[in-house]
Amino acid sequence: MFLGLAVSSESKPRIKIEKNNLTLNGSYLNWVIPTPQVAASATGVWAAIVPSSGAPTARHEASYVQAGNKFYLMGGRRIKPVQVFDPVNKTWVNKVNTPIELHHFQAISIDGLIYVVGAFTGSYPHEKPVATIYIFNPATNKWITGATIPAARRRGSSGVVVYNKKIYMVGGIKDGHWSGHVNWFDEYNPATNTWRTLPNAPRARDHFQAAIINGKLYLAGGRRSSASTNQTFELTVPQVDVFDFAAFKWATLPSSGNIPTQRAGAATAVIGNDLIIIGGESGSQTQAHKHTEALNVTTNTWRRLADLKQGRHGTQAIVNNNNIYLAAGCGNRGGTPELNTQEVFYFSGRTTPNGSAVTQSKLSTPAGVNFGAITVNSTSTKTITLTNTTGNQGILVSSLTKTGSSYFSVSAPYAFPFVLAPGKSVSLTCKFNPKTTGSQSGSILIKHSGQGGSTTVTLSGSGVKASVKNTEAVPELAAAKNQYLSTYPNPITDGQFSVHVPEKLTGEVPYTLVNQTGTIVLSDKLNLATATATLPFNFSGRYLNSGLYYLQITQGTQRYTVKVLLEK
Image (tube, rainbow, N blue to C red; front, side, top):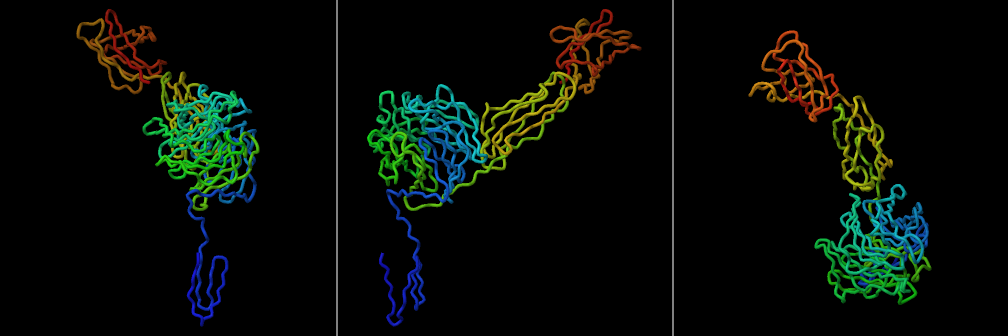
């Protein structure tokens, strides 16, 4: 750009240019020229990232994912450390190794926990699907063993995404690079630890990454690996398949929407309405692809973007503040050379990386639960509420162990392990069923990924004898027709009650207490000093199970029966 200044010749100004300042001395004119920005570009720019300290470990078939305000490089062939990249300060720090060899997975992050779902372990060409979900906790630098993947649905090299805090795994292959590519589609809900089989995708594919745009799941790129027929790289998939979560059905874009450069092992990113496929490998060339291509999901048309500075496959992309970050991967198809370089893509200039630091949450529970006095052989139920508080990280509740009295029992609403999201609560059901009298105690140990790693809730209660609650007047069985008995007081609170009979009785009055099966559980007698029609009874010192009984009173030829309900 040409900048013209109109200045009087008499003033004889002196012009001095320093960096971005143009100063016109003598006329006291200062003109500040802004720092140049990269012009907006339809194709964008890839630029190398030079770390200020540390470096990514060379690896491929690895994953790169953001949690909080940091980037995490993990997995790949052979066991390697998790590495943390601070995108603002450009520093790398090594963390703990993976628990086993994990590779060929698309990592995802939910509420500050990083999930590895559908990974492979082992060597080419018969890599084995990993049977469980592994979870990395950035706050504690620890790996946690998560849920088991259903045996009939295990595979690796799948597309894995998060939608509404549920994990979706699609496609993949069962036997490494050999055979068994599938079109399966599964949903896993970490909050309830439940799996659901969803409608199959239109076609099988593996070695690809999936993405969500506007409530739809997009599958682009990938292949059907077939080392068994010597076609490991050749059977690439051109079609783009789309699952609409609202309509709950699959569709395939018209052939005009096929990916222009067929390849597998590419990284996938989303900026706005663009599905961006980066790098990859194929049977058409030895070098890893530099291609970057974008599908506009509004028009279903592709366009070519800027090439990578270094062709690569076998890594994952992070999108942060409209920039795309890549690290590691492999420079040629297959497994060598592994790369330890980084790149960033932008359309209109570098942006400042953003994100909130992961803060470990606390699992809040009551310190203890006291059931109080409970009648022997009866059950009292209480709830124990677990709440994720303080931090912004999900808490994986991995197990629950009860110790102490066997009269206590506890159950959770879901099978372990399940995840409690920040601010959410779940209730455990705790029961106390004393079989004997006396005080009882116990405790519940809850293991989890929150602060402290475990929480203990104490349990207490005591068993007491049954008492009589009430009696119900019923017809006297052996007496005259329409003759009834009555009892009082009603209700009975201390186990003592009276039965009013039609005529006065005196002396010894035998009685029996019979349960509902007809078994006599108590035989005794009253000793009445004076004649009375009101007979006093006291069962408060008797050991009786709660339930309904028949009290039979006899004297001579007279027999009276009344129902007695013992209180729990």
